[in-house]
Amino acid sequence: MTEAHAELAPYAATVERSRGRLHAEPPPALRTEFQRDRDRIIHATAFRRLVYKTQVFVNYEGDLYRTRLTHSLEVAQIARTAARALRLNEDLVEAISLAHDLGHTPFGHAGQDALNECMRDLGGFEHNLQSLRVVDQLEDRYAAFRGLNLTFETREGILKHCSVKNARELGDVGRRFLDRTQPGLEAQLANIADEIAYNNHDVDDGLRSGLITLEQLATLPFLDEPLRRIKKAHAKLKPQLQGSELVREMIGRLVADLVAASAAAIAAAAPRSIDDVRALPHGLIESSAPLREERLQLKQFLRDALYMHPRVQQMTAQARDTVRLLFESLTADYDRMPDEHAASARQRAAAGDEAGAARVVADYIAGMTDRFALQTRDSLRADR
Ligand code: MG
Image (cartoon, rainbow, N blue to C red; front, top):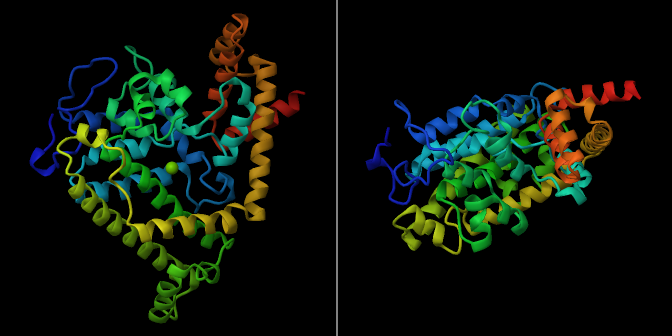
């Protein structure tokens, strides 16, 4: 099935211009190829697990905070809004958004940093690369191929950054990190929608948890005026609702600015196709300079006030210790993993491939939910 082309800009990704899938498949009857990617992602085991994975607050801290799953849905929603306004491919941008965090370890960034540390001399661990690994290799659902066999465009969008060394091993999808070219506009959009989503929902979760306050937010120059205005217009509203009003306004403003600034950049560069977009030395989807600066300030504020908050740091320390203990215990005795993983690790170790065996352990840990990681840690401790 083809897209309604009159509605898509000439520089949007289309099924006709797609670089296709690694394994050729008959075209879908009722959906486009990018819808099929989206649907495969939603049916993936790794996608279901996102609901039990930390965004900032560990899953058991409360039921009201974002998880990796609700974060991914918010990214998709923001990206789709901007995609429609810019006449980009909504199905593709949705597929990329929903898949972008599939490779995240339990316990958010603390988990990824700990696993990366454990794998330091064994090839490292990077959650973004792991997201591609999940859809290319680790999902095991099809008789004919490993992974989900997604289109090049979705895979291109999932791989946001990549070292030169890894890029060399990835083939076509890693090529642009060697050539220093761009991905398609849908990939660029999903990347920025990710940042808009997490900055704003972390403010919302931060306020809800009481770890940050409206007074602290008012110290940011660009939030002082909107906060005064909201407090004046809704003086009787409880602070939490004033905070919701603020977050709602911030997202709306960022998305409107992103669409306007990107439309202007696209008009100036005048690409006629997605390959024109890819050949440019710089991206075209970006906020205006003043709002880029605001995004940066908000990011720094969140780092100092929320991510470095003693209560979040306490969770971070626990997460680090848990991942380290899991890695050490499972590397010391592969048989503590399920049979399939244990056999694979043993086989590699027997062949002298230490890094390969460690990678099996890292894949297994990265796939865990917060809860399962803690349960496994407890059972490993009890075994000692
Ligand atoms: Mg994300």
